[in-house]
Amino acid sequence: MRLLWSEFLKLRTAPRTTLGLTLGLLAITALGAASIASSASGEFSSNFAVWDLMDLVSISVVFTLILGILIVTWEYRHGTITPTFLAAPKRERVMAAKLFTALVAGAVLAALCLGLALAIAALWLGGLDSEGGQWELAGRILLAAALWCAFGLGIGAAIQSQVGTIVSALIWFLLVENILSVIPRVERISDYLPGSAIDRFISTEALRDEPGIVSSAYGLWGAALLATAYVVGALVVGTVLVQRRDV
Image (cartoon, rainbow, N blue to C red):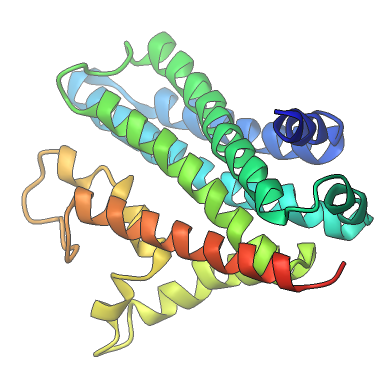
């Protein structure tokens, strides 16, 4: 319990980083949601605007990935990892506490983003359609945000360099996977990469009632299992390297 309290306290006492990440996400959400909602007119257009709004909320997954990286790497950057391990010599317990913190923090950050988007939708678009799968998608986004914050924790623990991990993650997810997806004979393999798995899990395509647009090699359950497997793998590798490396 003390380890958990300590990890949450570290989040609260790093206001510039945590608050900056949160405000950045909320600012993007507010501007994007306002633009989407203000351009909607009529019932048909409003329905599509709500789906576009849910697509916008899915960007929170990227921010939670960065947050997960920061949860572990800021200790290496500022040198606080040494007293942390001295206070708790069993490093796997430290990683377990950080994992719980990452899952909660990721879900909370995405919930703030979702709450802001829902408020805008309620004011301008009349809210979400309870029968259209939009609430289900909201739940999947929260779960994906928690998972990807844990994934960031795993790769951050493995690399241990804050700037190096963030830059590597952004290059991989924003550049490398997109390039691989358009290379002949490789694009099918790219469906099974971590970014593709999480994108499929929070995709709105299967719920929009637009036949012929879903091209993924697996369904939502397959995406959830694949994304979870990547998270578990990253955490295992990160924990092993944390235990073996001196600080």
